[in-house]
Image 1: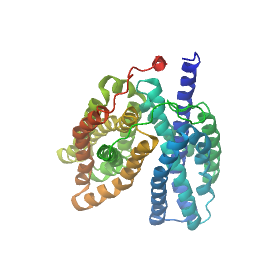
Image 2: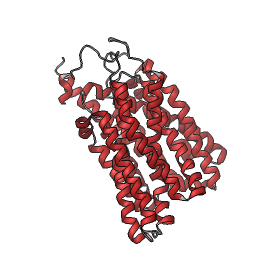
Image 3: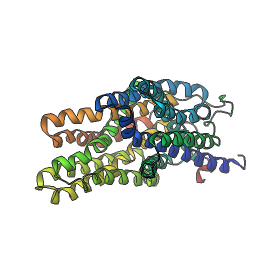
Image 4: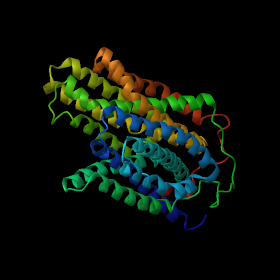
Length: 412
């Protein structure tokens, strides 16, 4: 083993930390800029919603294609070639002059989202395989921190009198440079040389049934997350009667818990293993949603119900934080390809796409408490079905390579 390999692994891990944080920062800046884009172009809710839907749909289609491309060229080359460009496309919506131009810009931005989502997630799986221990969860925590930082800096910039377009242009340029720097130290996957050529055994196929189960678990995990993103603050305001100052804290509690557990969730996953981690995560998220649901019926008004709901969102955020990292890691441990990783990314986008509508329509018919019963039930499904799926995925008869001991570099 080359004496420089531990240093190369450290540099690759730091670089990927930067890539995740940069991606979260650019996406967070776009989300923070939406009110300004809406006001500048006079869009309204329907047309803005159409543009956002287009980003998700194009992103989904791009993820499927990107997984296949990464199978051929390696995720390292994909990120070196396309990573910086995915951040630069933020300039497209920044310069959109009218609604038609915005739709074209949204489609272009969706391509960027699809490429970078698959690239960084698939590469995180490859890097974890080199380390021989869980490291993926922290990457997702840095993505969340990047998004939060973008929102805070956008607010600061607007407060200082900077225009919305100027902020987006600055973020796009900074993100492009940061992504170019972050992707330089990345390594080819195990079994591939720096030119992308194969020097090891081919990857193992994951059967259709298991891939479907993984997709459903990813979809469920993101629907559970969507319940908080889109409805936590509305639940506090409309169901619990919280005032304008307190209602937004519901999602803040959830997001903070999720970020902290993503940053520090890898040792927990290393101790419990993937099956028990999904059991614990699903159970914790289900318990959190149960408290949120109970808060609406056990107390009269926000005075008693709001602290109980906040406790519920804290538990839900803590549980949901590690579900997707566990799925990515398990696919990698089972020998899955980047296109298999793309399927998990696609399940996430599908969940975030369907979640608001599913909860909203049921909430319209039964009340928001009834709508939030959907993610609560899905958390139970994850707790029950997740462990079985993990065991079947990782204990297949064809799974066992001759050597399962992690390399010496696992202590890096």
